Structure formats: structure tokens, C-alpha cells
Length: 160
Image (cartoon, rainbow, N blue to C red; front, side):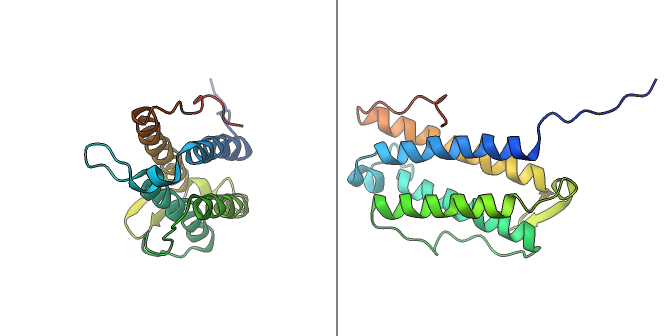
């Protein structure tokens, strides 16, 4: 008996899922008071702005590297925002970078191994899933910060 593998999710659906998470993370950034976005932390964790800069420094540059087959070192030093508006503007710009490069990844390419930032050698699809998982992880830290500040975060299921 032969079986044919059926695709669980298309590339377009994966991108839509990821962008849903990005939309929600953007809304979490928006809810933060400016001062607390840059200064508030719990138990020595980084301020949420620093976590967001990490997310901005990963997704777009990583997809560009994957598509262009260029291995560059990871750096959070390139973008050092001083305001929430700078973060939101860069978030939106990186969303367009993600859309641009993600749509250039072929189905076959998702299965190829890529040495992300010269440190993480995994299939492309695993790297992309890491980008999403990492964002969810840091957004959850942002939720904890907001609740500690007495601010109700956006509902996690509202990803539009």
C-alpha cells in the first residue's frame, strides 16, 4: 500500500500565521507606555524594547540571508531606537522585508539547510519556525510586564 504525503500548511498560510503573530506583537508594543517600554523589567529581565529590537534584528535580516545565500553575523547594534514610534516604524518596515523575502523562498528551499547567522545550521523551515516561536516567547514576557504594570494586554487570539 502506498501513501501520498499531503501538505499540512502552505507557505502562504505559514506567512499569514506569522504575520498574525506580528500584528499581535505590534499591538502589545502599542499598549506599552513609552517610559516603561524602555525601562521596565521584572527580576533582571531585559526591557521589552530590547526584546523587540532582538525580534527586529532577526526576522528580516535572516530571511534576506536565506534568500541571498549570505551568512552574516547576528547584531542588535544596528538599530538603537529612542522612542516607541521609531520601534513601530521599524516593525512595519521589517514586516515588508519579511513579505518580500519570504515570498522568494521556494517549496524546495524550505527543506534545505542554512547556517543562520553562521551559528544555527538547520533546515530553512526550522529557522522560520524559530523566528515565530521566539517572537511568541518574548511577547509573553511583554504580557507579563504589562500585567505587572496593571495594563490589560490584547487578547492573544486576536491576531488581525
